Amino acid sequence: MPTAGIVIIGDEILSGKFVEENAAFLIGELRALGVDLRRIETIPDDPADIAQTVTRASGRFDHVFTSGGVGPTHDDVTIAAIAQGFGVAVVRHPALEAEIRAYWGAKLVEANLRMADIPQGAELVHRAPGSTAARVWPVVCMRNVYILPGVPTLFRRKFVEIRDRFRSATVSVARLYVDAEEGALADDMTAVAAAHPDVRIGSYPRFSETAFRVLVTFEGPALAAVTAAHAALAARLGAQVVRREEPHTL
Image 1 (cartoon, rainbow, N blue to C red):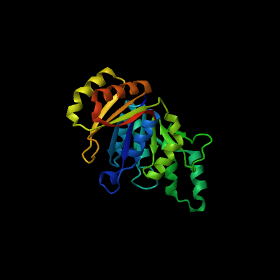
Image 2 (cartoon, rainbow, N blue to C red):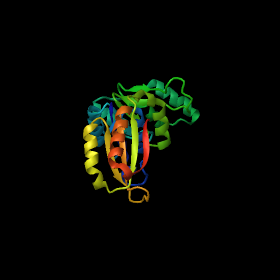
Image 3 (cartoon, helix red, strand yellow):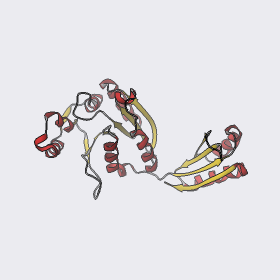
Image 4 (tube, rainbow, N blue to C red):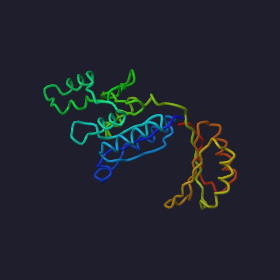
């Protein structure tokens, strides 16, 4: 599976002025696309920190997604910082500039044109052919770094436009709802995990539920493997399993 990292950029997130929504959205999207999310980092609007964090993530993961710090104001420093991190200049893209001028028309102010600035050598990733979603400007991609806005509605719209670019293997999942203490399940889970190394098995205690005490999840690229692991643990736990969510592909 290809890997991914997310870098959330913004003083407003770290200060608690706004609740972060974009990483939560992207977690589900990447999982359904078969992309293995390895890291989420939240950093301030500090150019040196952005440059270091983003370029480090670029070298570690197949895809990197940034959120925040793109726009017309003084604290929108992400583009310049990413350019700095990759050792390139910031240039104004003529096609993007033309789109911005056409959008704003007579209301255009000079600050709006900052949104046409991109790291030199970056690619503009356009919406998928035949898309019927509301029109958005293209996503700026510097090497394997996709630079997205921090406003959640815009972030989601922009990602959805290009999401098929990242589609990889399918992901199969299943669940067991178990009425037992987590510690009592440990030996059985360890044995099943060892017998099915291609399936990720996780256990999550639930203290507010009345019908069950532990949620056990199964996840893997192959439906047959997930089905086998799910059945094996269910058989070992017997009547302690109070509900099953059968294996299926996302």
